[in-house]
Length: 187
Picture 1 (cartoon, rainbow, N blue to C red):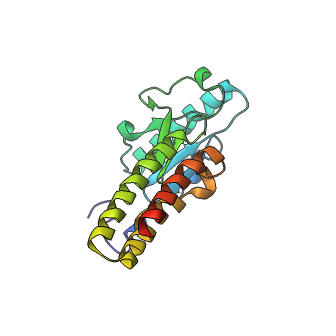
Picture 2 (picture 1 turned 90 degrees about the vertical axis):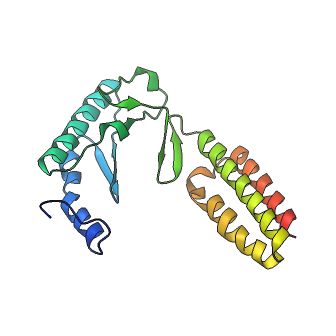
């Protein structure tokens, strides 16, 4: 192997982290790089729109240059720009990068106004599917098996990221209605 990290190896994740860890220092003055496995997010926050645009542009170019120097592939088609806050319309789009109003990161759907509507819509769809699966489990198995399915299929989805998105009663109500429905089904 000439370059890279062998995929699926025991040391692969550790070697990848060690080989890319200095990206944080490269982008540091302009934006903050947050890395999880092979996924990287560049964040910047500025008081003025002009400073935000400049730091975003420089930070992204530093990251692209870093990838080029270290023989890493920068996938522009998978790179997205999301602007959070009230002045989103004033921020210019980066060249060759898709500007989107929301993005999925680590299983959470983040929208530009941070209202969590899209995340709750997706979550409720997935919870409804789990309710159906639990009903099917109950029809062919015991209440204990349905309860196990509830913990595995419903609760795990419901609790994931709840500390982040669970602060509004309107969102909690939609999820709570689905939870009551599935509990009534099991009992």
